[in-house]
Length: 373
Image 1 (tube, one colour):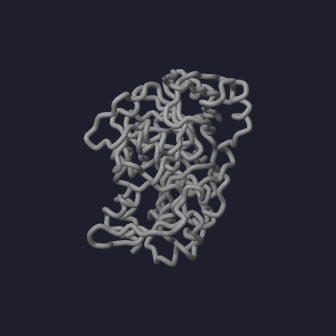
Image 2 (cartoon, rainbow, N blue to C red):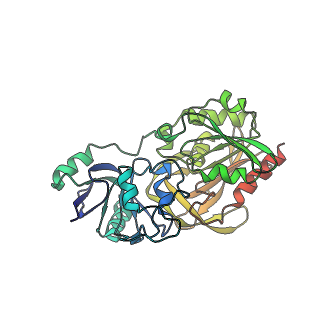
Image 3 (cartoon, helix red, strand yellow):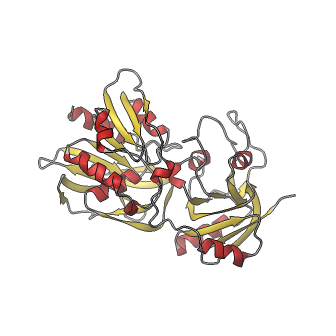
């Protein structure tokens, strides 16, 4: 017999369903993911720390869980919401069911609710705090706990998901360059993509200093994706500014794009419900090409779309925009002669799980390292 579960949003909207994964109680920011595949990579993305993820695809868990696709060592989502979980997973790589994996890692979830209605509610009202419980049956009491839980705005979370010790991902084949990568919630596939291009990647903790970065004698600096409010982060912004002062080539993704924006003097703001999924259209303004991209962000950079901005480090421009809502999806920094010095994007070019339209950005970074060698 299934265990009843209760979901309550901070505005009081309530859904009744069944327990999925571990039983208990959890709280976080309710967000929705529009990907139809890649749930295992979503669950293990550190950028989802303290977020309860609602899957818009109705069937989840069909291919079970394998040991090859996780993007980190654990599941990071605070809770999981699905409409209809697979009763029997089927895939040649599957080792266990998603339900069993959620239970093993203590992730509280709920199934059997109208995720379409929940998603529409979040689109109209915006991302908000939520609670899921199999132990509290009174919506009013659960709502009190939701209202007392932490908010995402103002949260500095990157250090909680970062590696505690530095490690090296060696270059595949002949080593061409060395890159210092700040782990703000890095996904395993990211240094892998650089390694494939002959880059030796030194992954450093989020607390690393400019001396730690320079100690590996890097040809370039990389900032990863990660959770939290970029406006609550100061140490990594200062580190990036120190690197830019030394003309160290920089490439940032997701959270790394937001921190690049702050380092250049731009502000950031919270999106109403964010972009999360593997089907987001973005235009690269430098080539006018449109790519389908993987996103996971609830904050964005506030930068002028059509006007170059003079900064202490060079001229900054917006390089990519989202075609759904015109949100800034990338930045470039060039010198007075128009030479590219650093760049960033607001999405995931490592694309696990897919699509691979943005893989060229790692080639662009490699070219930047070549030109600065």
